[in-house]
Structures are given as C-alpha cells and as structure tokens.
Length: 223
Image (cartoon, rainbow, N blue to C red):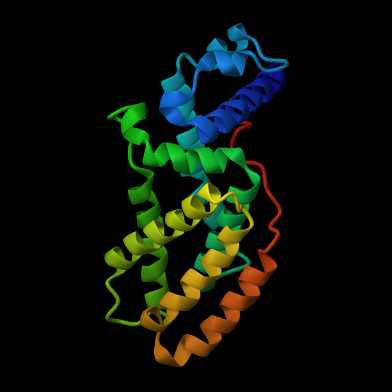
C-alpha cells in the first residue's frame, strides 16, 4: 500500500509540474490534473490539500536536488570547480528532460504568487555555489580577489536565465551549450591564471560528458 501511495504521489507531482510549467501558478487549476487519465480527486486531496501544497512540494523537490547531486558527484569530482561544471551540466540536462525541474524554476520565479512564506530557492542555490567556490579557493583554484557571494549570485542568475530564455524559444537542447559558454566566459576572472588552461580542459571534458546526462530519480518516491 505504501509503495502504491508513493507511486500515486509521484504521478500527481509530475502531472502538476507539467501544468505549472505550461500555465504558471496563477493559470493552473487542480481540476485539470484530476481530469487526466488514472487521476482522481480523492487521490489528489489525500496527498495534497491545495494548489499551494502542490507547488510547495515541487519547490521542495527542486531544493533538495542540488545538495543531493553534489553529494552524489563528490566521489567523481573531488575538486570544487569541476564539481561546479558537472553540477551545472547535470542540471541543464535535467531541465531538458524533467518537468519537475522546469516547473521548479518557474515556480521559484513566481513564488510570491504561491505563498509569502515560501523561501527563495535563488538564495539557497547561491549558498550552495558559494560553499563550492570557497572550497575551490582552499584548493588553490579560485583567485584570491574573487568576491564569492557576488559571483555565486551572478552564476545563479546566469544559469537560471539560460534555462528560461531557451525554454521560451522552444529549444531545450540549448541550455547545456549556454552553460558551457557561461563558464568559458567567466573562468578567466575566477581562477588562478596558472590554473586556467587546466580548468578549460576540465570544463570541456565535463560538459562533453554531460551532453546527454542520465536522468536519475528525483526525491519523489518519499512518502
């Protein structure tokens, strides 16, 4: 019974994500989810009491994705800068493949419509990136004069913009190329000059490998 309930929850979340992605929070209606095949009003309200609860659950999924990916990638990328390259490439691939990620970004932008109490994921993401940039400094890769907080905020803005612009243009293949261009453009101002050739090589290796990332399961299997 628990496994069946979890599957139903996942099904509802994904249906809601597709709706939020397409229509935004204000335009989405719960009866559009219920009208889908194999959906019922009883199942929807068993798991989620309102549209706000659904949107908040999707935002929670996306919030948890970043630290989960970082932990999973640690073994393969012990240095923080290549880990940042790989993280951004994986997220770009997930944006292309997973409606929950796309809806998570849209709902983050529209969070004031969801609830005043919803925390901004932008600051959460900037904090995650900031920690990795500080780690890169201790590893000798980040230039000493880099303002970590300012750069972390800029990278979040640039990355989010990549996803939104190309989604609006109907090209979900482009975000990964945009991420690669973003890093290639900012690296000269970020890393120690002596490390720049190596970082460029690692960026090419990581983003080439991430051109068609395997989409791992999100945390939508929890009860």
